[in-house]
Image (cartoon, rainbow, N blue to C red; front, side, top):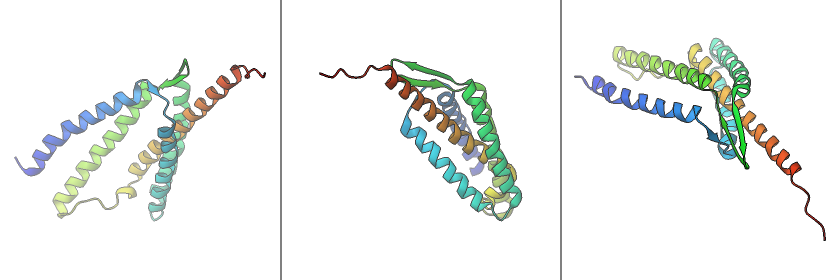
Length: 179
């Protein structure tokens, strides 16, 4: 066995295990954690902007990034309609749609696997890492735009739902009695 085959034999089960673990977290019942949601709502748009800036030289990749972003926002609107929200005794939680979570996971893992083998082949043929032009691939930027905008707008939607629940709770509480 060559070194690259040994690395693959070790890495593939680890990656599959991590993807399965990630899937279980994404589609199971989740408690609303505002700090985590705010981080997603701010970090993903920043990354989107950085990738867009890096893609300025390749207009096709930039258009695909923006198209993926629009598709991600539309998918998050559908995701919110299919999400199950719970407010049990003030403990806010939600359960995302499993089909959307699985589809996004498969898209990401499929593209990662393809790029991994593509870069490994380029490194083998050219004797280099094969990482150049990672964001110049239109399909890669489309998928990145889809995922980043989906998670950012989904987080914003959860935060909006949370704020609505908090306002409803505040309105439902009677005002304090004055002496």
